[in-house]
Amino acid sequence: MTEAPLGLLAELTHRCPLHCPYCSNPLELAGRSAEMTTDQWRDALSQAHELGVVQMHFSGGEPLARRDLPELVAHARGLGAYVNLVTSGVGLTGDRARALADCGVDHVQLSLQDADPARADRIAGARVHTAKRRAAQAVLAAGLPLTVNVVLHRANIEHTGEIIELATALGADRIELANTQYYGWALRNRGALLPTPRQLAVAQQAVEQARTRYTGRGPELVYVVADHYADRPKPCMHGWGSRQLTVTPTGDVLPCPAAGVITTLPVENVLRRPLARIWYDSRAFNAFRGTGWMADPCRTCPQRHTDFGGCRCQAFQLTGDATATDPVCTLSPHRRLVDALLTEDAAPDDTSQPAFVMRTQTAS
Ligand code: SF4
Ligand code: FES
Image (tube, rainbow, N blue to C red):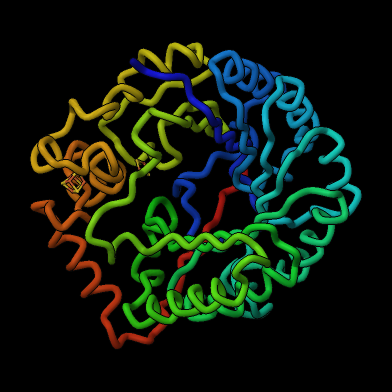
């Protein structure tokens, strides 16, 4: 039986002052005029609540770009939801952080690009590092818990130790270091982002040293390994259509933030169909629920209830078949595709840093 979702990722806007090349937003970004209105978002949040959602993550793009953010936060809080703000921190002044806390934000997730300001600004494609440091202070002054999250890739992964030190000094309660997931702009930049095995070893060692140093004190440290280098895939989304749904700036409803890449799936929209019907009845959400859709080797594999066959988006992007075993799995007949990427894009002794294609948006 299909259970109700726990979480909603509300991508309020694709607008963002940063241009990060590792962004998982789609290459075709929605402009301001295509975004749902305040009333439409309020209705979508109410529908999510009625469906059973208890955690609402306001994200983007940069959610602070929406002037109605306080109103939407207050609406979510009024529904009894736990409200998480996922932000670059640009524009998060002390006043704004206090106002958002008063409206009902429960937690802030702040992104950093690197520890060194010049390197960080180069990755962001904008001079924002100093503003982010101030934003961290504003979050703490507003009495909110702070998670610092950093997407790791070839240009910053060797500075993992410095990044942990900076996030700790900024007062983070939790540090999330996640290797890049290759969707959207990150897929476009995969050749410039894939770390080398030596770099991964450096990062792993820095994480272990920090864990030893901060045992029993300091922030919680979460490190998400680079799945291209793993033998088994990540349990993506804890299973398709099982816990969370994403609503995009235009109202499209997706089983995962990247699901738009699976061009064989029909995309539903909350402006045209009730959210509950989309969650329970739509073809898109039912396509890979459970294990019945699996082919060999997943179909009979004891791991299938643990990793759910891996990531459907990655399977589609690499094989053209969304029902295929995630090629990261060494039991997949397509694992050679991942090995070829590692050989071509991240040769063991390749220390070069190819140019990024920065995330850009055509105004509308
Ligand atoms: Fe997971 Fe499928 Fe690989 Fe088994 S064969 S480990 S279920 S991806
Ligand atoms: Fe879509 Fe993994 S990112 S299923």
